[in-house]
Every structure is written in C-alpha cells, then in structure tokens.
Amino acid sequence: MAINKFKIKDNRTFQQRAADFGNSAMFWKGRKKGMIHTRDITWDDLREVFFPKDFDEKYGYLGYIHTTEGSDISEVIRPLVLAMDKKAKPALCPRWFLRLLDLFGNDKSIVRVRNWRLSKLSQRLTKGIRFMDWKTKWEWYDLRISIIADRELQDMASKIERDYYAKGEQEEALIELTNINLEDEDKH
Image (tube, rainbow, N blue to C red; front, top):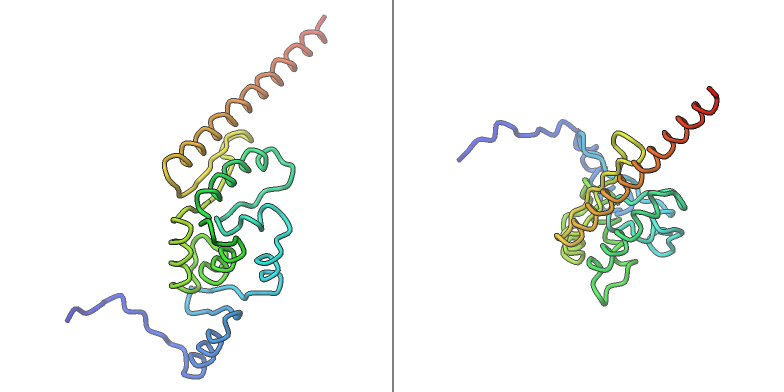
C-alpha cells in the first residue's frame, strides 16, 4: 500500500465538521474547508437563473462574460458569445436549466466546483464550451479573449482580436497625425 506523504489532515473538531456537513445538506449555504471556499447562494442568484436582467446574466452559464452595456468591447464580444451559445445550448434544454446547473454545479465560477455531478452534467450538456476571460493587455485596443471551444469558435475569437487591434491601431495613428498637424499649424 502506497503512503501518501501529502495527506491533508483535517484539524477541525467534531462539532465543526458536523456543522460543516449540516451546512452542506442545505444546498444554498457555502462551505469552507481549509483554503477551499464555496459561496453562499442568495436570492439574487436565483433571480438571475430564472429572470436574467441583462446579457451577462442571460449567457452567464458560458463563463465570465462581464461587460458594460454599450461599451466597445461589449459590442465586439457579443457575436462571439451568441455563436458560443448556439453551439453550446442543446436544442431542447432551456437556458434557465443551464444557468441553474452553473450555479449549483460550478458555483458560477470558471475554477470552482460546488457539486461534481452537476458540474459534469453542465460540461456534458454544453459540450465543454466555456468563456474563460477577456482583457486588454498593453493598449486599450489590445484585446485578449480566452475561450474553451472548437476550432471554429477559436478562429472567430482570433479574428475578433485581430480586427479590434487593427481598428485601434488605426484610431491611434489618426489621433497622432491630428496632433502633429495641430502642432504644425501652431508653429505657423
């Protein structure tokens, strides 16, 4: 028999372990064991599942899609999210069920798992398609999109990144030229 030298010893008292188990029986209460925490499920989380207010809440089961309504990045990312939804959502499965699985299976997180079986069911239904993150790197127009998807959606994300960068570079160059022209006029 192999001995695990990385065995994690639970130093909590019996009462603390019993209370933690009791909290796990109540599915809405978060748990804490060592460094691993799950969040408490609130009434607002349940409202998001059944009555989403905006685009981010409606397609939140795909992952981290937080954008500001009407922003440039929101307008750029929206077609990608809609294409991901079209590929990920099974035909007869309502979105509210996928959001519910994401809430109770993945804890509305791209890294945490609240319930292993529900998380696996969510992955299986959505074919593993996830929106991991988006960010701007060096300049405001240097967009980086991280997704887990098939080649077609990966190519779409790459094209969006390239087009957004090219458009941003053009705008920066135009602003720079305008500033140079204004400086030249001031000298004359």
